[in-house]
Length: 315
Ligand code: NCD
Image (cartoon, rainbow, N blue to C red):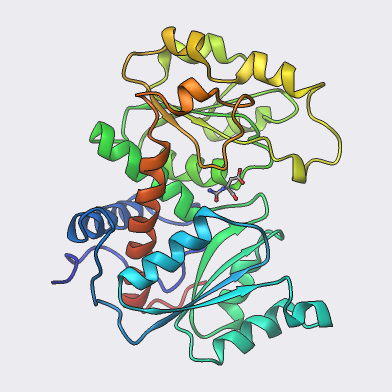
């Protein structure tokens, strides 16, 4: 049993900006197949046994790292776990040399997360194996964008024509950027909403709606994706206090009552309860946050599978 053939020929998954709508749909269709074929990502398939996936993470991660590992193992592949803390990076080895060293252990895919934008693109040029971007600075996080879209599609049956608001720290969010590209290509109306210090008016040039008042857009939204404030990427505070941010942008019970009754509440995690979302909303009936986590495994299984099939030489 193998996934149905789809329109895909790439060896690397670096960002959603360069993918076509057909390629994004191919990834989502294959992810749905993976989820269904594994009883909701719980059972193993032996589609990629004998292959090896290395996680090269130079930044913290809970969801993404474990999800990639499980995805590889659900497909029968082996995994190698690398963390920059305690490695030879501390002895002065370059990023590329570290990656080449891991690759030389017989690795077929490198999954990389790094605080510098473009590092996966660099590895795709320097390595012979396949490269997947698990987050490069504030640039992109393509599998996060895909798992968010898969979750919307499962609950709504489509992406096209829906109004999706990304709320919060758009300026520093790679999740926002991957969602923006992917959702636009699949025909959603996208709103970016947050304080003016974190939401640039220039997004309008790409046909994206820019809003600074959540209460003013709420009744039009089919989906809200609530992004964490990335304090670790901000040198000066972007608003006077967390309390002020929460008053204006936290999704809470009062705002839920003013929203469409079937609104989907999403968050890439980690969530900061009481900042961008209150516990009653995070744990409430419209929240699909844990579905997103399960779908992450399906999306990463699909990505590993499709890249293993791809022969294109593009980077
Ligand atoms: C995000 C990340 O690290 O980019 N989390 C994730 O991968 N699920 C978002 C965040 O850190 O807020």
